[in-house]
Amino acid sequence: MAAFSVFVTQTFQSKLLKQDKNFKLWVEKVFDQLAVNPFAGKLLGVKWFREKKFENFTVYFLVFEKKKSVYVVNLSSKKDQQRIINSIWLLLGTYKKELEDLLAK
Image 1: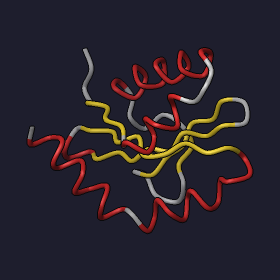
Image 2: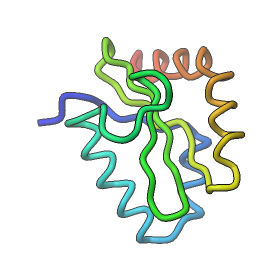
Image 3: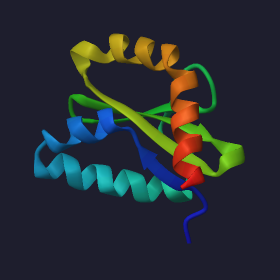
Image 4: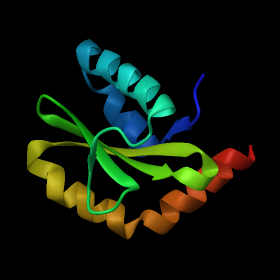
């Protein structure tokens, strides 16, 4: 049984739609894994900001332990990695509010 709920941003969802079938299948498996073990993947400076990699792509997610939720916020290729990480740091407040709104539904 899943201990955590997994949510995605619209940004992540739109980027995912452009990916191939193998990547989408891998993402489904990652979501299943995160529901059971939200701290899977490599941490990015703090316990609650993490990444999982597949070939040339990286999926970024935030773990909200008290809310029992994982918020998958973005996806990048190798060349965009630092730009995406920087934007996630800037948008942390927005992501927290979005997740609270999703949980309130």
